[in-house]
Image (cartoon, rainbow, N blue to C red; front, side, top):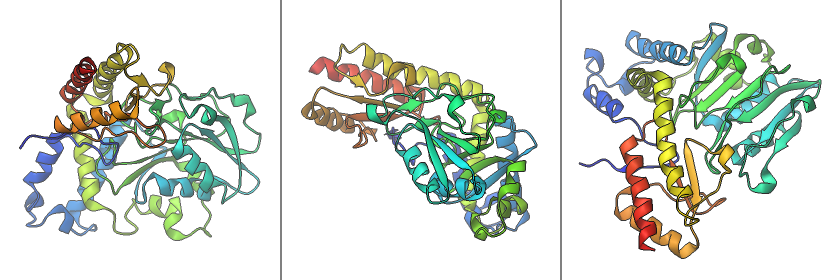
Length: 360
């Protein structure tokens, strides 16, 4: 069987090594006579997997001991609610940088729990760029500043983050976590749905400073209180055990590949291949994102008209490419080139783009 040329935005490609490793123990995990899916989440065998995943993530991202690592459910969408519910206390303001649809949704949820403020936005430009952020505008009673590090729909990404803030920095890193080195100590909360770079859908990683946990009130619903999960090693209720196991394998794969630095270098190569194909096309392909805001994870571009776009997508499908349709907010095409998308697959796409252009 030949593997699909998978450029889906999420759930997305998983490393082939991870799938093969999981297959080896599919029916008999560590000689238990059971699949990982059948193990009790209270068993020694599963607990080892659970803790190993946390340890690997802490090692790969250099997460200090004063941060808690939580494995939750509900995706980043639930974190849009849990962040303000837990740390937007009375009399404080939740501050947001709007860079796309997901930051808009995060803001919408925060408004249900308290006062909010928009500190920067590029909505009027249809989110073609990461807008400048004037940190001097952060109000004195700000609870936090929330950013979305990478915007899957519009193909933009923060190249650097605000520094020396007087308020906690919260980041939704669902679509670029582990894709490049970041200084975790610059952030107070990082959260990410797994289904793009961390593993399959079903588990959400939250990295949170331990002193912020004290803001979570006992009056909160038990399952929506960060302290509940921190005190119980994310085992208060049955976790998504298979997803966490596959997460642990993805982390081993990243380690085997040379760590985040090596992954980042490959990601730079992949992005350059596609952006060069766009920039050298003399306008046949047009990138949605401005050059200084381009994402290394989601390459968005349009063609000259709907007819040519349809022909491009039809021909791409015939060639085995999957997931290249652009989001309706942008139109055109989108190639999601997360960590697990092989360099060779991206090279094939770049070559196809040039061949298609020559035909027209």
